[in-house]
Image 1 (cartoon, rainbow over the protein chains, first blue to last red):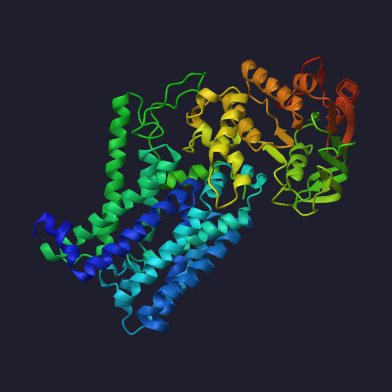
Image 2 (tube, each protein chain N blue to C red):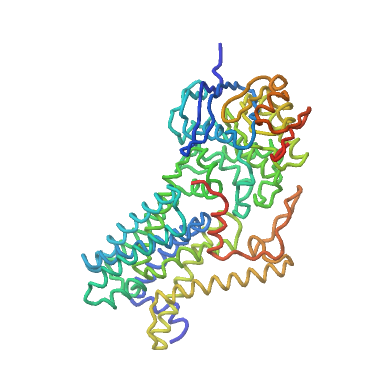
Length: 329
Length: 260
């Protein structure tokens, strides 16, 4: 098998073509939503939602078979979004509270799945996804779920960014924090639903978090974050599928495609991080806000430059920093 | 023909769900008037500002904006009349946003969800930046500006919404003389344009240079009137609850308090 076969010809095969369509749509939407997750520091809440979806997937599978996956996951995810939004506004959004919710949800899912006759097989499919075996009649629902998430975010995008930057200012300007949080958490939940059916619940988080973190490394221009994150996610999804195909068919090693996709996401992040470090060193100032962009010339007593030793933040560091920013819910 | 005051509080109280708050507020601010809000930390100054914005519930009295009574519940809308200048130190300096984009946020309330900024909005943003003297820094990342420039940038955001009432929370904290002078000049221009201003401050120079009257608060409204009548040593000592304070033409020195 040649590289061209893996990168292009493989996708002429129907199941690979379906996987590519779903993953490209999902990657673009997850990239856009993921930028907001990054800016708001909602990584751990997103993790909670990925686990909250698990019992929905399990119950959906038990009740309706494969066609019950998306409805089951959607109900569980939206219930999770409501619960986490409520916890957040009630002021009990401690990491412990989220951890309790997500582990409780996960245990319910495991109990439900354990009643299945094919316990191991079902569990593996739910945890690691089944991107290469997506039935043709599930492509449209997955694209639709992703589309709803994208529309929800795009319609509220100005206000979401305002809230991410200045929560109190956003509320003072008349924005409803409750509505904005519900919309964003629901959008995250819908991405989780679509992704859980493809890359599985354990790997969903990479799709939501890595593209936004990459975009923060690449650019400090607000509106460029979204195309950069979406573009990175789309390319990584394509290369991940191709890698999975090459390893499984070319090398004869059976590897879940969801895992290769996420591996490419993480490798991509590591590569961008390394390039950003080098770019910072070349400029002689370490890594600045973005590894690639020099600061504009100062013309009026700028605040002291960041220390040269500063390094770009890892995805979860952005979350911690955003929480420290004193955001008012 | 008489004009309704931009802001009128009558026997008003604002109380956080936890119980802390400020009460006994009787206050009017007309077009082109500025009022300084002075009191110790924890006196309820920020609670009063948040109450006017609708972010803290009003538990007594009435609040009128432009002659219309505001609802008693915390409201998400003040019909675009009120703008708020927070302390810039509260914002995340690492957020990837330019000064121009921050100022554009002042236009969002008028745009709603579906409309995006147009030519008129960009013109309003440019005008607001020009007014605070930061037009040449419009494209710079907000986090790379000095503290004073960020504060002026947030003032530009407030101005871009073209408010009738401007609320400022300790706007001079940490500013150098050049930025203080620029802020004072901008506030004077705003008054001349008919904007009503309510500013929480420890800076008596600001009160004397810009404000027409002063309100002393410490959990309740203690005094209200012209600057020189209210800012007496006795009044200020009563307001700061026996803490040894020094007061002269420009400064209020309160041991253990930030500000001037």
